[in-house]
Length: 88
View 1 (spheres, helix red, strand yellow):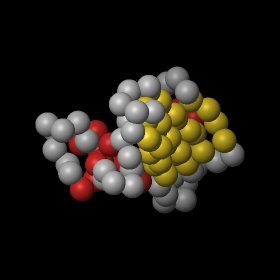
View 2: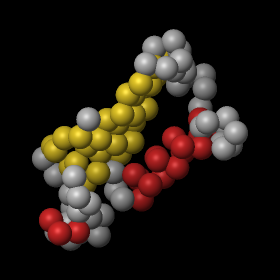
View 3: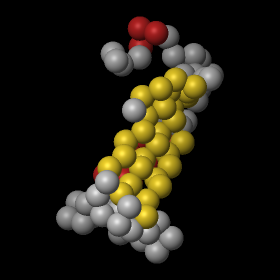
View 4: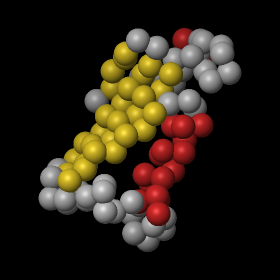
């Protein structure tokens, strides 16, 4: 799901997979392309470099939801021009 909030573009991706308990399993602490967690770490880093926020909601047996919010204004103070945004 993709939507626009005031001064942010938001993206949500959810699944109904096995999920995990974020309180006991920290993907950031167990980075490896072989355990499937490298993707979350990479996504978080990319979003934060752009000045955004990254949230992971998950429960064991309940699936996972990832929400990224990216500012429409760059972290350097200039607003992102419409022609610089990726096509929809």
